[in-house]
Amino acid sequence: MLPFKSRLQRYLPDESATSALGAALARALQPGLVIYLHGDLGAGKTALTRALLQSAGHAGNVKSPTYTLSEPYRVMLDDKPLNVIHYDLYRMSSPEEFLDAGFREDFDGRNVCIVEWPEKGDPVLPPPDLRVLLNVSGPGRDVELQALSELGLLCLDRLAPLLPPQPPA
Image 1 (cartoon, rainbow, N blue to C red):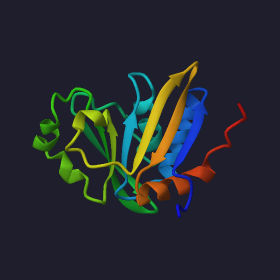
Image 2: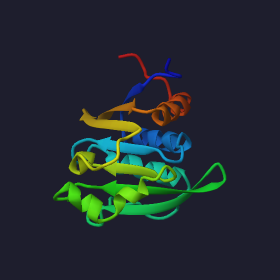
Image 3: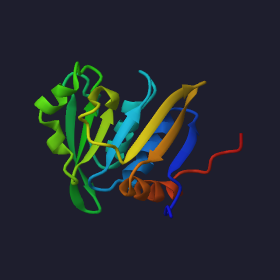
Image 4: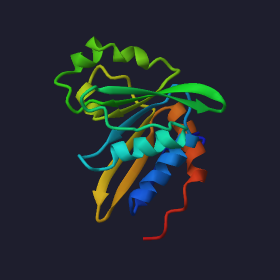
């Protein structure tokens, strides 16, 4: 029996709603969590990650690591230091680049790994605990969060009460 729903869906009407989701997600993080972010260019993957990192306590700039492929951040979670590593695999030409860079070692059960364009890392990228699907919809975005492991379910279980209820359609 699942402890909670294995997926959540929301409509994010504007940038502030995307930021609020990132802030809520920061409070639901668990060490070792692997998050895949899916969506077209401009769908809000980096905006969501930026809000998550800033809400987790990172005070500096957060940009998409499009050219560096990864960017590590050190934040505090429950008064303990935690590494959050943000990947953007958009410019990766083959999955072997991921292995050659040694990134697989970051997926060690202690770091939180957030991956934009994870399909570029198939089949060598470790599987996600949480998949986030973002789609532009009118002036806002549709988002679906899917738990794909026990750790993902724990994250959604912690996240759900932090989100405002979805207004009726």
